[in-house]
Length: 344
Image 1 (cartoon, rainbow, N blue to C red):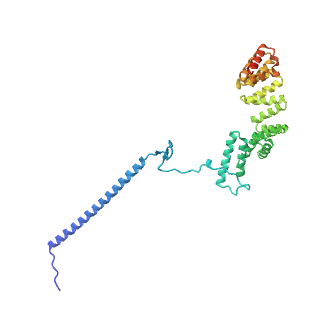
Image 2: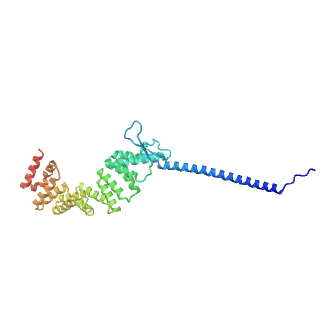
Image 3: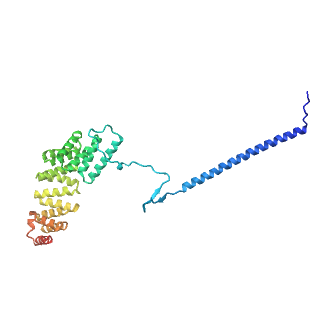
């Protein structure tokens, strides 16, 4: 058996030093590699940061589309959502057999017809409004107060028979509603069923004693029926609660004139002239004053009425028999002559 070479102490030291250098070099290489990686990451972060800053600094650019002039187009780098606006949808009528199911499409259709109906009503297109509301009812028959709108369209169109049918059905469901009773009474009055209308207006006032429209309509019913005493009583309450109501104030005063209650009429007309001055008020005030011994005041009121209308209308007013008591006055005769000359 051969003897192995003997390792001296110097050789062992040299090998130990050699191993230390290898380890140091390996560590240095790892550190260098880590530095390179960190450098690459840092560089990439700088590039990304510059890209983000550039994107944030980008402002909308005004471009003119090809073939157009002075028509800027804003380019939004984030884009926009495209909406299906309700107004862009064409209205459809339900099929004759009705809709099979209340889908979002038909709900949208009901909204379109409802909006069209409201706009038509605001514009005074009562027929267009009625047709639109009826389309809504075909889609959504149970919608609250829709029949009221249809009934109002019938009233506006003076189709009183259909209006009465609508409001009678509504009153059957809501007997204590003063507005519904009032509208039913209007329809009955339109059909010249005055006794029924009077009872209906009375029911409306029983349901709500402060409901002004029913009281005014009841006064108008008595006025048109020639019942001036009852008309004056009812209209006096309307004017007391609503002095700004020009129509009710004038109708109340005329009822007093027809009853030959000249002083009361003059007082009512003077108040009306103060609150809601108009040509009819001044002409009627002249009539009242001509019967109370105030001829000069009557002529002043007459002149104020004439100043508010054209010559033709003024001449028609002063040619009424109500002003016979003033015809002997020279100022009245001159006024009549001036108006006649003005219309030639």
